[in-house]
Amino acid sequence: MKRVGDLLREFLKQKGWLEGNPYEPLFVQWQKIAGAAIAAHARLVDVRNGILIVEVDHPGWLQMLRLRQDALLEGARKAVPLASVDGIRVRVGGQGRSDR
Image (cartoon, rainbow, N blue to C red; front, side):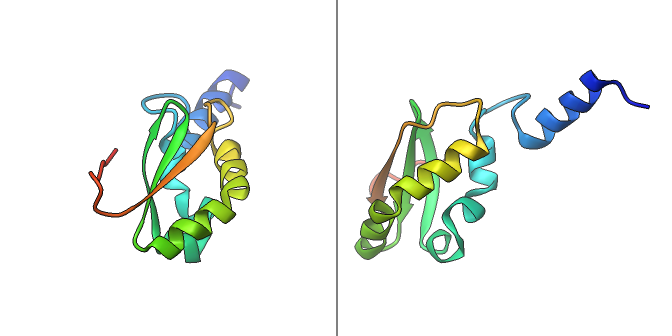
């Protein structure tokens, strides 16, 4: 039988909250957070001071993300409840692309 502390540590490690980047689960779960249609055209490239930086492949998708902003932020906050997610910034691809 495992101790509660060991189970908690395993759970936190699975979620990516135990070590490294506390925002890592956002990158892993981006398709689930954004949905398949949006994720096919929008890529989470960075998180700076709690702001998600998302790059889209067409200006139309920029507008779509702005319309879905509240839902995206809610999904992101659920994915990383121990980290701060305060907003989203969307840009069209090719503008100083920044990888994690």
